[in-house]
Length: 378
Image 1 (cartoon, rainbow, N blue to C red):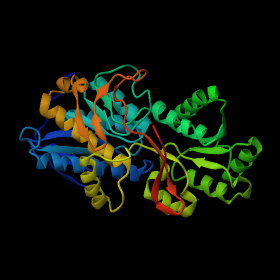
Image 2: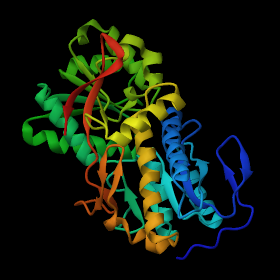
Image 3: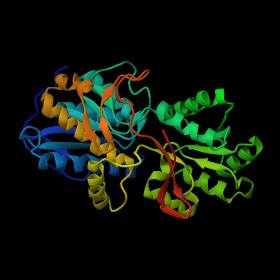
Image 4: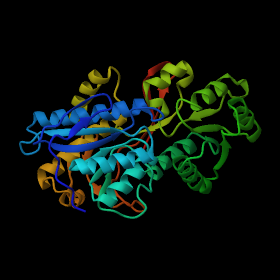
């Protein structure tokens, strides 16, 4: 399971350009969705965080005097493409793997990294079963879906919602989310009603919400479609003026949501993984990311930055040997943008897990959609 040596003249690809790699650099492979059907805006924020951290590491002297280099591959939300990229990055001799936003893609990457013996720090994907079996090769920064979505369910119950409809599409991720909600809400008297959007047009979703007496609708569907069309239809239906629309997966986090929906996109609670106050490092990084992105950085950008911060410390402390890096997850204690990052074995989670990143339920303020309101924290 030892990695091959890094070949001379290996190339860095970021999806738009190729350049010669520095032979003495320490390389980290980065998986990022940069083209459709991937969530491109999330990928851009993730990459901004990753690259900003690489720059800071190199400004501080690199990895024991060697520059850190990011070797980027676009996954386009395709698990097969991600697995192929992991194979390629392993052949190029990267010391570790970072990134990915989409859970089903990260799961494919984690499985391949485990097989090849390549350390992988997953940045953003939350699916509990990131690997089929426990592994020492994979660690994760984002909180597991069961943890975050139970906090979201607490928010729903606290807001008086017990009859909840989910508009959903076929996906391991959406199915897992539905199951988490149902299992958590049922003992509290809650009911989850599934609406399959393959069979229901947005207007038919509205009819079902009225017929079933739901007080909340959760969007467990793709972005921008069919999420945007469903929101528009519900907002236009006078029968549903009092219904809560929610998006636990975080669709309203990004600027594209506000651009497409305007005022209709406000007051839709979602999960994000930020503390009430960033650490001093986080405050500085926020300024850098805001300038780079020309907008407020999402939690995904901070996840990207923290990923490189952790991996850089691992590589400084334990060298570039892949096995030694994978053995070090339990000894990590790194100050990130959102607090002290340490890894442990969480029940039911097969990878090394930061337990837990801060979790908030927030929405866009209807009076000022560019501002986020914290509704609940866990």
